Image (cartoon, rainbow, N blue to C red; front, side, top):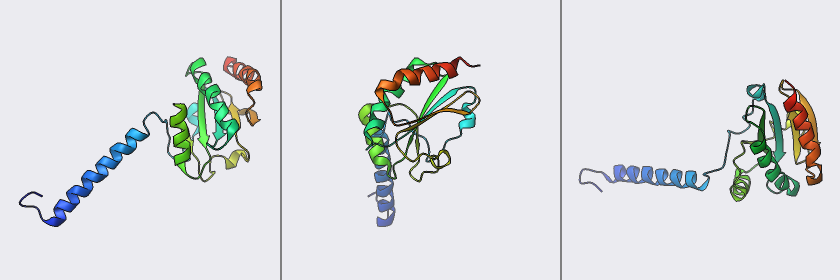
Length: 164
């Protein structure tokens, strides 16, 4: 405590330091996890690109299997051609964030705990993947993720990417 401080001002200063420390710890703990604000998804801003939109949850086995494939897609295609966006459907963010740290994902994430993003597309099962063409029209939809079908998924993406 500084000589001119009152106990109340010293307590406020201590509280501010603790909050700053907690904020720093939180940022450090979640570093490398790409994020977006809850239910913030405007597909119109991706016009001109093919959009691979994947709805997932950390407890979903097939969802977890899809992440390496999606990461590979985001590396394989030019950013001007394809954007991969993931939408987490869990009410609590912590399990999803822990999973993303575990797999070191840098894919963009929309947190949709209340289902506001999933509802208009009638997403009732996970994983669900919606693939939109460059004009924003949904052209393909997949329920589940089957590793043996990745060649088919790539063929669909290639056909959309080649459309101009």
